[in-house]
Length: 451
Image (cartoon, rainbow, N blue to C red; front, side, top):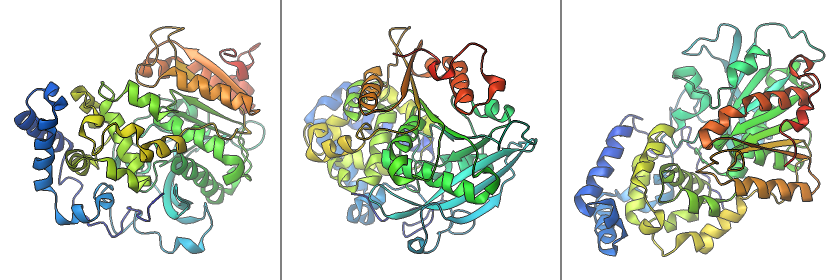
């Protein structure tokens, strides 16, 4: 169900990434809605929706109408340099390095060597695509037993534009790690791999694409730095990064069986888009939920059929936005069901197929797993990503024979991420057999006790 488009630099017409700034895009949409629809409550009116669709239809270009899927893909970064086309990927194996370069981060990391690299990977449909990643390796020699440990840090990118990917942000902008584990990992003298796990189409929330990107990035890292090929490894990710982590853990036994991980840690994990439709759509999380729908449509082109003209036009305007304005757009509390091309779109055959294909649990990871989540049993509870989905995944994986620890923590989606850091680091140290950071008398594999 995937597409052949890959957009580091390809046939999609290039234009300046600043042609439509986040402020202009969101302000333009808000002005149009206010002028045509009036108050947000008016979006419940079929008459108002028809007016918005007519307004949007007049603004679509012939190219956008001709290829609606291409119209929602992110704008290419460049046709030359690191993000230029990768060449003939068909002759390469998954994880084969296409190019690599030393990076001088805009915010210096004086204690580390930084490299970014591009590898061959496969998208949701199994077609060859390029994927990029960053390796940060401390300059200090590793004094522990065996080779230096490696942590595969799956950042919650939660964005639609290619310039929001970690490899670009580290080299050209300000990289923000959430929760802020990167400096703690480097302080422990671990090497850190940061995959651009949304892939070349910035397919936010597409699980299989993310899994392949992560696993092929690790393959590339082992080629780039043979000294790390036998390193003990763990994966970690929160929220959008947790999607990449749980899917990589689940796919590893069949997609990359030669890789050996000591464990995987995922927090605030979105596991069921039917649950998210009820918790985020039409609520404060609606901006990021809409972005996730666009991200999925980039891997499942048939989803574009569900977009009404107004929804589709908005997607063309916000297709390059980073996380912050997408999250802020949630204040509008847009109900995607109201602006879809069909009634009750989440129940459509197209949507149901995508929901099923992106719900982890069909197979069990062979590596140990720690899942943690903001829980009402502790305090507050995750208001965006229901804990129910995480608990169901724990139960499903355990039934299939996986070793899964579950840690309910206090807080909503953001507080929970920070609250869990000490337990996450203890569990990670135990998985890596790094006894310098394991508390005496504590079993790190049971950081919070079994659920």
